[in-house]
Image (cartoon, rainbow, N blue to C red; front, side, top):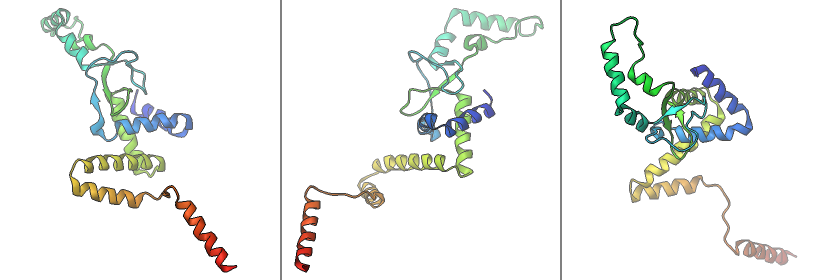
Length: 196
């Protein structure tokens, strides 16, 4: 898939309310870029790119393939015939990998992306954020806040106290304890009875 095709697919997911949850999941899993890691062991089941559906390969599959006798024979053959115009110019690594791309995964996800699609996803998110897309900026804000909170919690007691104070100030939900409403109503009733 070209970058333009990936962008078009992501734009379609953003427009469609049914697929927007999946897009939210992808952005949270693969952003920031530090969340992206190579797939070491081949997972059970479907191992295709979540966006392009292209087959993927794990690093362990490559390492296992390099140590086979077939790979070693392909390397020796390519070394012997590298200057022969009539020989197959496909390298031993290209034969091993075939049409598969290295698989990447993100944080807290069971999805996989190819390296080119993951790069396109990151570029698409940055483009959307810089052009003022409200939904993407909201997603990035929630990612930034959660990563900041996680980092601050690991720093120490002073940082934890300041973080709690900030989050308490930002929490604008009403808080009631059992009996608060009854005492408030009782006070209001007494006030009303006192006026009449």
